Length: 102
Image 1 (cartoon, helix red, strand yellow):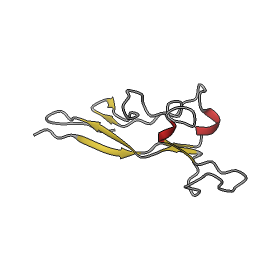
Image 2 (image 1 turned 45 degrees about the vertical axis):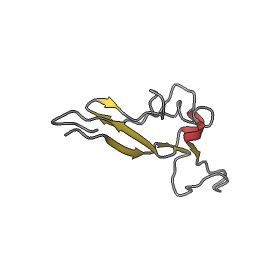
Image 3 (image 1 turned 30 degrees about the horizontal axis):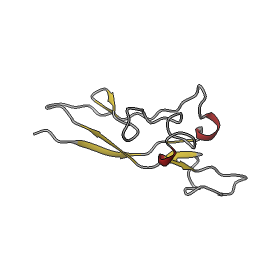
Image 4 (image 1 turned 135 degrees about the vertical axis):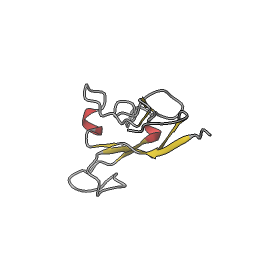
């Protein structure tokens, strides 16, 4: 019997603010049978700082920047990351038999 596989995940990075739209692009991967299923909802875009940030897909972005050591916008001041995604859900249909998750 095949079942739908799902998981909840969030991507965080200390590079969110300073490296958005640059050549440095932290990407989150959650692989089922070699396919990255960590995607932005209703799209085929992978979860990465250039795809989820304050300018693009901002509905899924949380600003966590500390300014001068003070939390002006940070909901999670104990986390070093300057930004993170809201909790995202990955969906995939496993194949019958053995499956690999990475």
